[in-house]
Amino acid sequence: MSPYSNVDKCDWMSVTQGLIDEHPIEEDDLVDVILSAWDNIFNSTFGSHRIGITIFPKPQIIGAILHELIPAELEARYPDEFRGEETADDKDIVCMSDDFYSIELKTSSNPTKIFANRSYAQKPTEGKKSKDGYYIAVNFENFSKTNPSPKVLNIRFGWLDHSDWRGQASSTGQQASLSPETYQLKFKTLYSKR
Image (cartoon, rainbow, N blue to C red):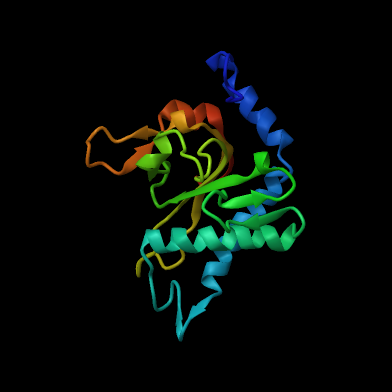
């Protein structure tokens, strides 16, 4: 059952803060891990090329790299507590002592929003990971020759239920998004460049 069930919307932010306070990763540590992972992108070489110098990957590529680096950085700092996803029913960041604290990670080059596959708006099927739980949302600037050193814009942490995701109305639509109210009440901004 959702921690927000039977709670007035005016009290949702206090539920969100309570969930964040209960999580084993401190807010400042989470920000440091994500910003370190971001910086590591610029310190990496791919063959003889460097990101932001000779190659400027598309946002989807950067998101995929962050999906690997952030869990790896958490695992390096907390080797007995966290690890990256290994199976289809794992979340992106697995809390080994209590799956309740496992985290889904969403990244986007949109300055303020995150998106998911339309399946996130549906109840999970057996053998698939739950779409309910803790989420980290990371927004970042695009890489380009005119912006070779983009920045992380926002880091948010909170709790989402699968019912928070709104699937595209079109039968061919593959995207799910969140309402402005969800960003305000179910996420806490831990870092903002703005």
